[in-house]
Image 1 (spheres, rainbow, N blue to C red):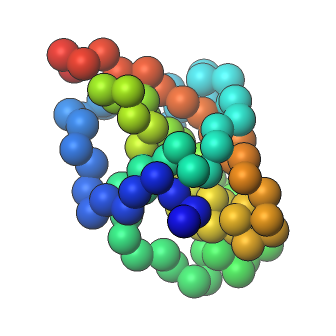
Image 2: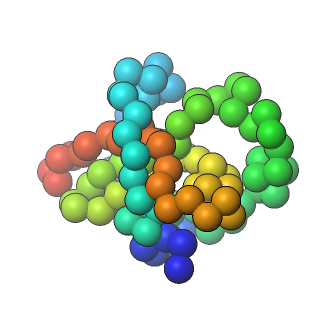
Image 3: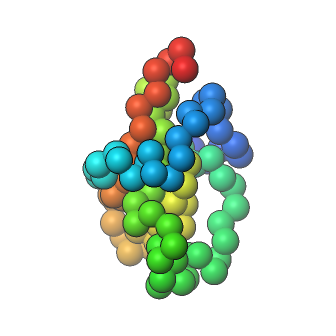
Length: 100
């Protein structure tokens, strides 16, 4: 199994972060096996496009909530890493409090 679990949607409350807020979070490495996805569908064009990060963030966006890591944005990057047999992914991780 590539991911810890596959979810359809975000179980955590809205964090209200804009793209510029995500950009202020330093990237770190996370294990693919520790991630729960928030999307069940992958756009094949994003997966295969070498320039898929041209207009977006170079790093995946992960939300840490109630002890679990949720892959909010960057599913195509995570799948690409798995296809390249890498078990780690560089991501920006936003820590949310349990009461957020």
